[in-house]
Length: 74
Image 1 (cartoon, rainbow, N blue to C red):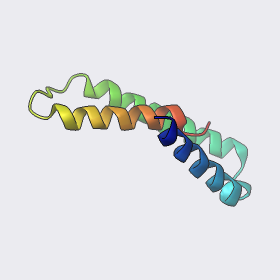
Image 2: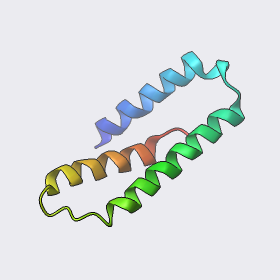
Image 3: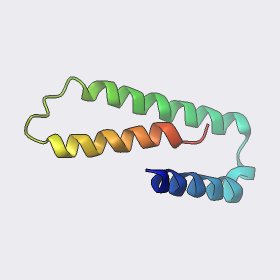
Image 4: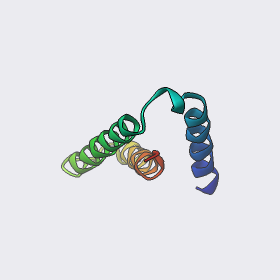
């Protein structure tokens, strides 16, 4: 888990270094906030889905959502 989080942190750090000066801080924060809100909405919607037939895929999707929510730059 630590390795996976470091990969995401380094990726977004490099993207911010390369492309960060092209965008205003306000727009970067707004896009990040909207993305996190959409991910939280998708996670809440997943609680209403019957996942009895595809539990493994649901688990993987939930982990991906959690990693994206936690490590998406704000």
